[in-house]
Image (cartoon, rainbow over all chains, first blue to last red; front, side, top):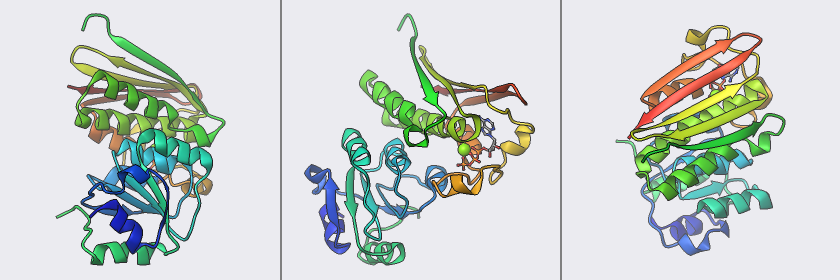
Length: 115
Length: 140
Ligand SMILES: Nc1ncnc2c1ncn2[C@@H]1O[C@H](COP(=O)(O)OP(=O)(O)OP(=O)(O)O)[C@@H](O)[C@H]1O
Ligand SMILES: [Mg+2]
């Protein structure tokens, strides 16, 4: 699924990394616990989260993720966006809640990446 | 390769916002040297977990990454409270992190086991009241 489709499905605003909207991603995950993302996530390219701090971006960067979606209209700081640009990560914010956002992407075919 | 490449970083314990900065820089450096994505990811995740631990459990410390001919060595040294029972700390789910750390997205007790999983060698040298030094190696 292209990142721009994720944007459309989640009614999201893209905050940085517009140049990668046509990139394809194969799977996603959702969590507010970066500990769990680091321990359980394998090759998921998209992270949906309600947590807003710099460690969200750094965690995504360490795991080679391509896109971070903040749910419930949460807004990252300028500093976080700078970091995301530096790490080559597309960041967007969606008015949807976590459950709805994950469900929407899953039902449209963006899987978990885990067989 | 000859002389090993060494990167050293001070990890600030007072400021959670900056926690993980050293790992981001190491990842960038390893990328420039041309390591495979798999090796870079293993080093990055293991170091990031250890760096976050130094900030939330030990008030910061020093991270040193050495690139040798066939392995990358990560040494994380702090003068924090030390780990009383290393075996227990290595168990998945064991955490002494306070609730406010969980509010920041950490403190599930997954870091140390994850560091072990992503590295080829890992040793913990810790003395209560003195500090902790964790050495990890990733072969390539
Ligand atoms: N550098 C350190 N100094 C002192 N204690 C430490 C240090 N690193 C780990 N510990 C102790 O070991 C426990 C387990 O660490 P581990 O990284 O596995 O989990 P955590 O940091 O509590 O949570 P998570 O890593 O999932 O965010 C910690 O809760 C803490 O008590
Ligand atoms: Mg930890």
